[in-house]
Image 1 (cartoon, rainbow, N blue to C red):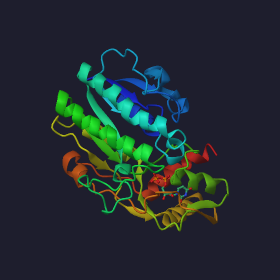
Image 2: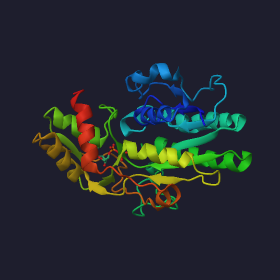
Image 3: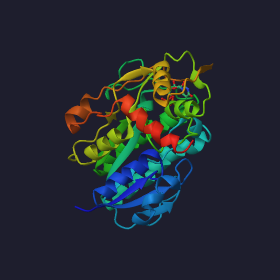
Image 4: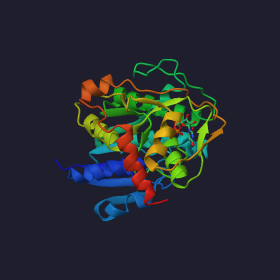
Length: 311
Ligand code: UDP
């Protein structure tokens, strides 16, 4: 059935891929983005197929007409960007969620929240199941994002309990792929761009910290599967690739696939940088019959191909 679907943050890396899939499925899409970190470049090829509204979700929403589903992806997600204006980041997560939940309440729309593995903070439990409450610094430089996203999850559950709205929450682990912002400061985009430009790869700390990287297409498939579940399935559901790599291993793979023998340049580890992060995805396997299909080597090659055209 054709639906009218609102995607906030739709001009971003993940949002634009999600919109591509929703259009493929024949839905009508309304995209809201304030273009703080999103880019019209990501949606230029579909601009005449969607309704695009430049709007900041910390402000009251414009009149949108009937909306059947809401995907809330609006928030700067990389440390460089979310720390640039931390107060605005916090407002985006919390006040933005409030406006969208009110819309869901009044329109009867199902609402999806893009939460994050950052709700686990610098985890003391490894790997992380959804039941883990996290180890989060409430007053550090990452807190605007971590606590903002935690606050949004709280609001989603309180709205579901108070107003019986249908909520779906995913906790997204590190994701990469085409349309990542080259200036985002994320490790995958940094390493690829640096390598393609024959510059040293900037390894923060000793490079032994780990992350698990999920290719964007796998992630979006997980979004769609969760949104299609019955009402009693709310999440939060971890979505990510459980294969864990150190940053040094990642650097090695990037160098292998760009073919550029780039040296490493060690730089200080940022404050509160989690030492390790790896999802347990049993819930997603069980509830959504989902698991990542694209492994790091294949995904890196696709991402390198994308950046090659731009660097
Ligand atoms: N990192 C790095 N070099 C870079 C950018 C990041 O070594 O040029 C490290 C960073 O310190 C962190 C990991 O890579 O330990 C992942 O960082 P990213 O910003 O991509 O994501 P997040 O910290 O949110 O997981």
